[in-house]
Image (cartoon, rainbow, N blue to C red; front, side, top):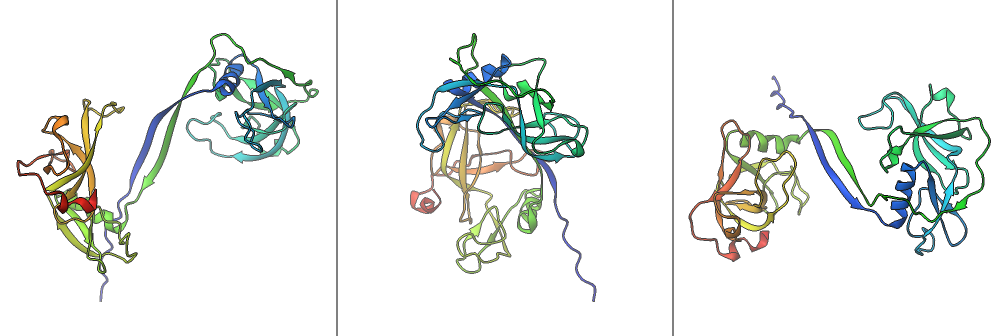
Length: 319
C-alpha cells in the first residue's frame, strides 16, 4: 500500500530590521566622542580598576562612576575565535579573528576584530594596536579593527575630563535579523487556507477551544491539535491601539489603527489593521470583516460590517 505524499513544507526568507535610537549618558558620550578623536577612554571604579569599554555603574558595588581615564591604543589579546565567513555589516569583508583585547592600562577586555592573514597568525598573548577608521563619526566602528603590533607597551593611564567639542549625544544602531522561516504543519495549513480567502484554526481535543492562528498544540492543555475548524470571516475588535509613527517601507498614512480581532468561532484574537472608518471611531466591540486585495495571501485590512457592536460579555475573555 503506497503511503500518502507528504505535504509541501513552506519556507521563506524573513528579515526583521529596524533602527534603534538611543541617547547617551556622560560616560558613553565621552567614550564614543573620544573614539572619533582617536582617544580611548575608560572609567575607574572605586576599588581602582579601569574598565574599557566604560560603564556608568560599578558592576560590583553598583555605585555610579564618572572618573574617566585615557588608556593606550595598544594591548594584548586575551582570547580569540576565527571567523571564516564574515557576514553583512561585520568589521571586515574577509576572514578575520574576533578578539578580546586588554588595552594597556585597562583591567577589562574590549571585543573587536583583528585583521590577520589566517588563524595560524593569531594567538592568546599577542600584542596588537588599534587601526583607526579613515572617517570617524563617534561610534565603535571608529576602531576599524586591531592589527598585530611589535612595539612597546603603552604608558600609564591619565585622568581625562571627557570634554570634547561637538560631543556625540546619541546613536542609531541598525538592528537586523535574517533567517529562513518554516511555519510547520499547523501554520502551513493556516497560510494555505488564507490564500483561498479562508481562515482556519485548530480545536483542542481537551478544552475544545479553537486557536487562530494554530500552533499545532493547545497552549493551555499542552496537547496536540489536529481538528481543523474554519472561523470568521467576521469578527469583533477586542482591543486596539492608534499608530502615530510611520514605519519604514510601509505605505500607510498615520494615524491608523491596529487591533486584536476575535473572529467568530475562535477563542484567540489575532491582530490586523482597521480601515474604512475614522481612526478615532474605532472601539472595543466593533464588528468587522476582512478586505482582500487581488492576489494577496492574507487580508489587507478589516472594515466595519455595519452590525451593532458586540456585547462585552461575548469577548471579555479575549481582551
